[in-house]
Length: 178
Ligand SMILES: [Zn+2]
Image 1 (tube, rainbow, N blue to C red):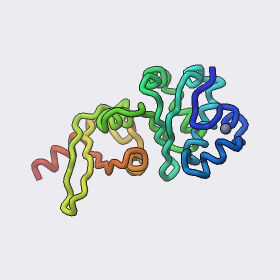
Image 2: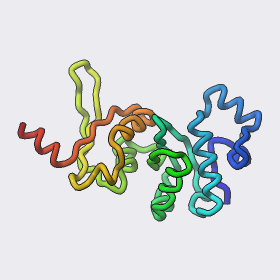
Image 3: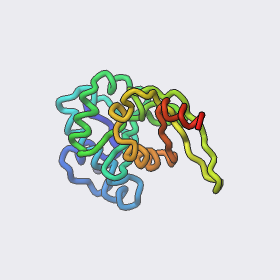
């Protein structure tokens, strides 16, 4: 089985783009992040059969961390083997979050925070008219489970244009009574 990727599978395997993919990259139809993620997935699919069946729709990169957007139906098989995420992080040398393509912002954020639970998603309006999206997660060791909040914020902004605020349940309660 070969994964479906933003570039040709053959290009991803060899690491050399064909004229067509090269021109799509130049025109900005695909990005360097798409190319790097495709190479990692093609390589890892040899020993991870789950990755052989996926469709990578798009990859986003921010400060060395990646958000990888797959077809919705790929999410359950990808999560059935937690080693896949770790192997992708090893191959891309950064933090990797797996998300399903399309869907609401809340669904996107639930994918990003998985396996941590998203308790609440709120829009916070700023004095300058801008807005941020505040996500409240359970207090217990959330950072360890979710990863570095700073990297997460950059990656989420890159992938969805969401300005993310993350609070644990405990912080949210403290802010409420302060
Ligand atoms: Zn190609």
